[in-house]
Image: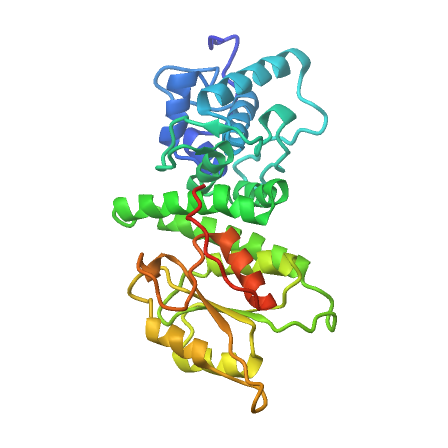
Length: 358
């Protein structure tokens, strides 16, 4: 379409305004225009480009598809095709319009069509801003949504991952790999992407806690000793414990989560007061791994004389290093942690299997 005096350019939104509303950078919009032709159809030399409702709908489609894990080139083809279809048939009656600059509500997110639904079990090698490697397609979609700071898309994809794969598989193949990729990007880019990691962690935590609450049994229906989960003093990484708590609750076990940086006295007091069948202590870094404290927790005893008992203590997290710790089993992933905790609750021997690879 060529702008003429008889065919004036429709008044639309600027690139900066559109970028802010979509949660992408202006550079990304210009790159999509240059690479895939997803730019304003009407252009006037010497003026700021304006995006019409049709242009905006096409870019929204691009954002939605890439957030679902579709590779950018494929998403661009689908967005252009949808724009062509809309130009022939007109917009659907239920499709929301893009908000104007006067502060109207943003559009309601629609579910992607079947062809673009994530979690199809495929793998993607498309370029990404995060060092994801060879991972499931939905990891890339989740990473893109997090980098764009698209809160609604992040929450939707995290929830769909858990619903589609189950909590353990979703954690091991989608959530944890994406978190690790964001962490690596943060460490290698001079503290950039901290906000991305925080956003992603918050939504993953929300989904894990929701799964935990949904799985809680009715009060008074369990008489088994609880499982106690705690981070060692100075340790702030709680997401692995939240994932384990939800997985154990799904299997009907009572769980007590003490959370981050539990002081030694509080940890030992909690063990004495609650009499847990199993205790898992999490350490993300070697600076927080305290073998002496773990042995103290394992030596806490309770019960009547002649029938005293003590907990089975498990060590979780990479902070414990590669060397074995005497009499303290170390699950290597979430699935093994669940299996070993169940065995500890039943009082059966804890067998540590080979390292699993996602």
